[in-house]
Image 1 (cartoon, rainbow, N blue to C red):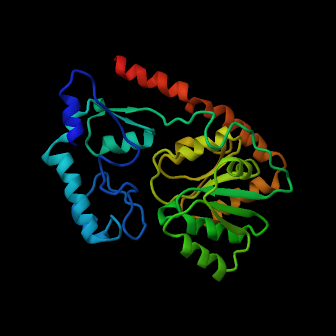
Image 2 (cartoon, rainbow, N blue to C red; image 1 turned 180 degrees about the horizontal axis):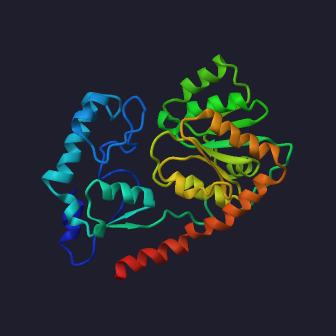
Image 3 (cartoon, rainbow, N blue to C red; image 1 turned 30 degrees about the vertical axis):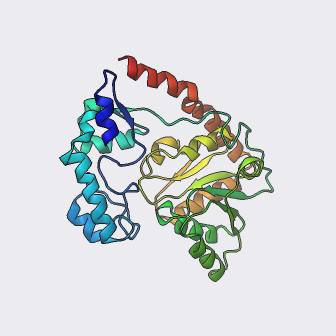
Length: 300
């Protein structure tokens, strides 16, 4: 907050890029403590305390609410910002509904350079490879339970869960308990190994149950030439073109996710075609496009 006031003391414009629900919710994931998504336009402190929205703890929620109120209401730090830049139209519209003036909000998509972690290769899977991949933090709002249930419905598929997080031990326990033999936890991967498993996958799966704003991993998947199967919720919905760059499925519905996986396994060359579409469409999220748009804001 102090930085915003310091910047305001100079003649230049102050822009702030938001990657989550910073202006409307004290929880960056916009979920209740139990993991359910919150649909309120703006935080209601009574609801937040009841639902233990931050860390599933009333104490942590109370502290976060105090900080949320301090920066937004007491110090009016947000008034020091000329314009907020939001990476999805979904987040922009939600923030506008909460009462923030439209004139202070603008859409500016995330970007990832073509030399990113996943590289520039077009997907190189073979029809005998029936692998799907999840990349991300292993936490409840990422929809891991939905993914595990879907994997059980498609036993001839292989699902790699790449990443780490607070739920890793619980996920491993469920896989063992339920005998989900086609799911493998890999932990963190990077470099050549990550590029290899991405390129060999039929699709990236994003089963999030929360309101994701604009997942960078979608852009990276397109750059790697593989399609995306994403939950039809939040910013995911505008980054996956259904039946063109991948598939959208009803959030929190394992059967719907399993059906999408089955389609990609059943039709020869489908993953390759959707991945090629995504590779072309995803060029709008490259570094040059982002830089040009950002400069236009400063020059207005």
